[in-house]
Length: 228
Image 1 (cartoon, rainbow, N blue to C red):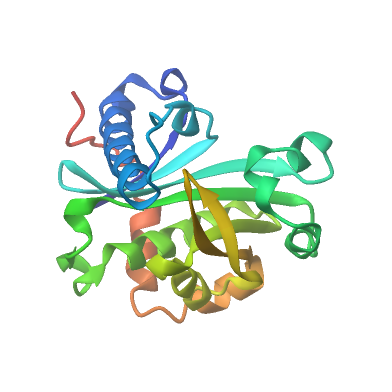
Image 2 (image 1 turned 90 degrees about the vertical axis):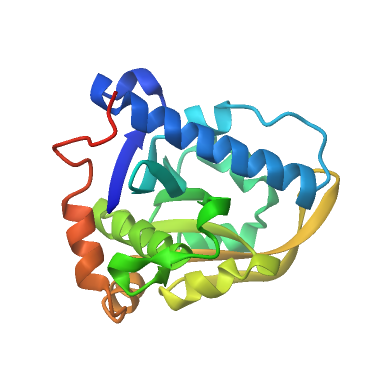
């Protein structure tokens, strides 16, 4: 059974019933990205928890009792100097930021697109065995549409094909194949922007859009089946 949760990045801001969800999601994220930084980016640094805890909200998809996929959201107003100086945008050139705010300054920073290792070679039986990466991109687009924000970011790893997923769901390329420093290595990324009209059209062309709508409406289920 697939369940979607939207939780706050700070544990104490979630009701006690969601603390188990929070812990499992954090553990899944930390294990996945610590391995990524070590093996893919050859970084020996320990992965700090504040990348998780500073987020406004975190979308988590569970399969039964396991966290299968998740991503992060932080809300910013790009008219504020504090937003422009956010560490997320350190690698973004000025023309990319100009493209991002072309339709308004109210922006969601979407980051840490994560499919946990145990779920990368399997799909969700409930949705025609669709890969979890497709379900995650679909649900983060649903989150964006529900937010009513002007735009949403994406810094997408080319070697993992994440940029292709975002284009499938309506994202617009701002910069293609840009070198990005990751640990002691570099990787290529596309900088992309999501806008409401593009995303809406692409999302509802997806064959399981109705099922994702239902999953969204039933997020944070009334009965927490894995709550402590």
